Image (tube, rainbow, N blue to C red; front, side, top):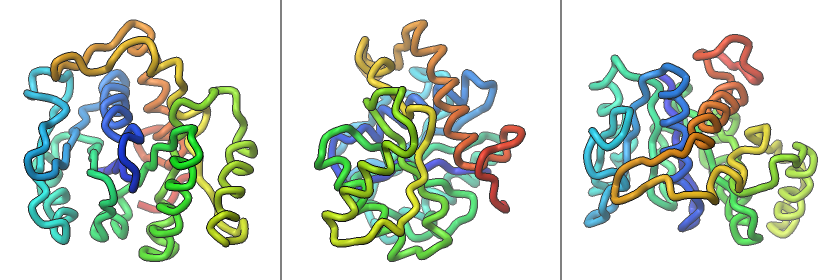
Length: 233
């Protein structure tokens, strides 16, 4: 079972919206995704009830951060008939059990502002430092609200400048979901959540499957044929 984990240290960087879009995209592709929302104590869930979404959802309340990785894996294991799994993590949470699990792919949404870019670079360095090569090759940047025409080398140039501000050389390899991640076009016309219920326009219904396919292809998923960056499962 493949697990796609939305993480990042920043607040308001689009983790929940991106996780909902990806779950919708997997559903549009004919898959049976499970979305796990990890909530801080007292935090309301993005979705109120399972029947408000076209896919299965589950919730975990963050009582002990040290065990949340095991709790996520246990919950996913109890829904082995579903897949893939999408996890929406709170800010600043990178469970070691998931970082070192070959089935996990960490996705870091990156908005266009300087603070968001710097935050993503800091997160990449943190993941690289704690999980070394194993965890790092399973971490991708998901551009959010960027122009869809940007090429990979243009993203890399932006990220390398942020890396230099951290006092690091450009030896870090940035893995970026292409083409375009989640462009502004897919986020600006309407909210994806209305009173706890998912609402997708016809434009978004077509777009989410494209986003999902781009994620699967870039991350070497076994769920599609000839993935871009396939690695051993």
